[in-house]
Amino acid sequence: MMINPYRSTSKWLAVVPVLMMLVFVVAPVSNIFITSLNIESFAIIARQTTRNTVWFTTWQAIVSTILVLLFALPIAAITANFEFFGRRALISLISVPFILPTVVVGAAFLELLPSTIHRSALAIIIAHIYFNFGLVVRLVSTRWQQIHPHLDDVARTLGASRTRLFLTVTLPLLKKSLLSAGLLVFLMCFTSYGVVRILGGPARSTIETEIYFRAMQLGDVSGALILSILQLIVVAILISLIMQFSRAKSAEFAQTVYSRIRKPQNSAQTLIVTLVAVTSTLVVILPLISVVRRSILVGQQINFSIWRSIFTDAEIFKSLTTSLRYAVFTVVISTTIGLLGACATVYGSRRYKFVNLLTALPVVVSAVTLGLGLIITFDVDPIDWRGAWLMMPVAHCLVAVPIVMRIISPTIRDLPNGLRDASQTLGATTWQIWRTVDLRIIQPALVTAAAIACAVSLGEFGASSFLVRRNNETLPLTISRLLARPGEIIQARAYAIATLLIVACIAIVGLVDHLGTNKRGI
Image 1 (cartoon, rainbow, N blue to C red):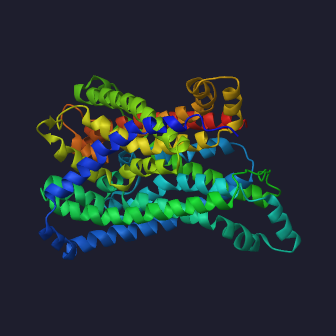
Image 2 (cartoon, rainbow, N blue to C red):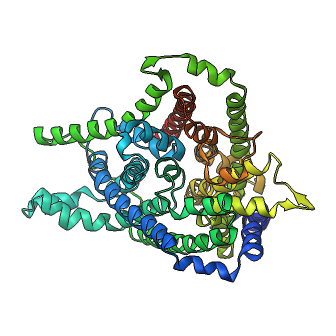
Image 3 (cartoon, one colour):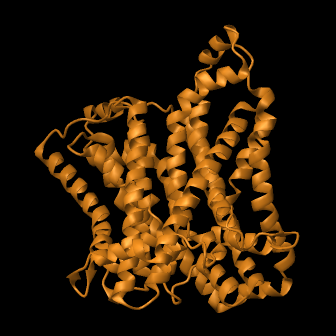
């Protein structure tokens, strides 16, 4: 075994990711706590309104998580065990809601649900189920395929019914995946912002939306920081548990995908598979159809002039071009920095794991707190960047980099060392080895990471709510603004913009799954 040819370069690879996180995450967040937090504000914890907000945030996240798991489990079962017409298309389709901008999901259910349950906890929970169930299906289905089919055969041979087989064999083996997925969904629902802001209204406020309200509407930055601390503690605990379960799964199970997938063996299985597949398809597409439908209806009459107006209206067209420009910036910068960080973490010694932890900070710190820290920190001389166009795409990059790193890192880690050893034996330089071996193999992961970064930028809403100026409004912010204004034509424009984002997200999911299929050779 030859020496790792990249070990000596790891310290240089880590420089840019570390500097970015220190300058745009650690410094702003630390600064805002040092300059704006005061002891008297801790009294906010004792207020009844705060307790109500924390309680509502917690119980709606718990209920949403339980319902997401219950809804996703049957879909994971059929995608992991059965071959049927449209299986791959269904897997791609159920992934679309998770990468949709949260403001689009909120707008979809604002149109689809009866007005009697608008601004209610039920509307928020339904939207959270829609947003998260595809993620759970992906995670649980992948683990389900790692269960050797011989275990099923042995259990049946011993006389176990299908129900007993599931309860005594399958479910215990899925337990860690279900817990990990459940914690991740709880984290998403607990920190939800866009969905709650659109569907919840003032009466249904979570910690995340309350942070925004206190900081921007009441000017109580210190009180907002107290709530941010509470949320930060919960998020840190959840991420720690998720990482612990992930390490346990990696150590205990090989990442082998067995040939569990088979045709339904009888009419009962065919009926169940069909019902689950059709139901999940309808669940995904109905909200999307409602958005498209609302974008062409004005007073119950079809009116395509709405679509023409979003390209001719100066403000909306500027939002479109701004979003595209920021997306390109985010793709280039976050993919580059994420690649450097992933390489530093994988190629370097164990001490470089701190890079992985440091780049996870934008996930731990809420997007709302991050945006607040940026506008306060970079609003004083000699670095007065508050009004600069650069701040918003930088915030998008901060949110995208952790995701990019976690897409690229496993691919680099799984590269066979034999290829590098052969190149090194033949006299290739370190750069030649990386360019001809590593880079070629990780190209699909790079494209996937870039596509996801694009989706993150197009849909980012939390930090952007703080950093927005009249001349740099993005599409999600425009949707939120238009939905808050009366008038059918104005709101139809919001749904037309949402339709554009839906099309973009579907294209991104299609690209990612196409690359994944080619990589597996199936």
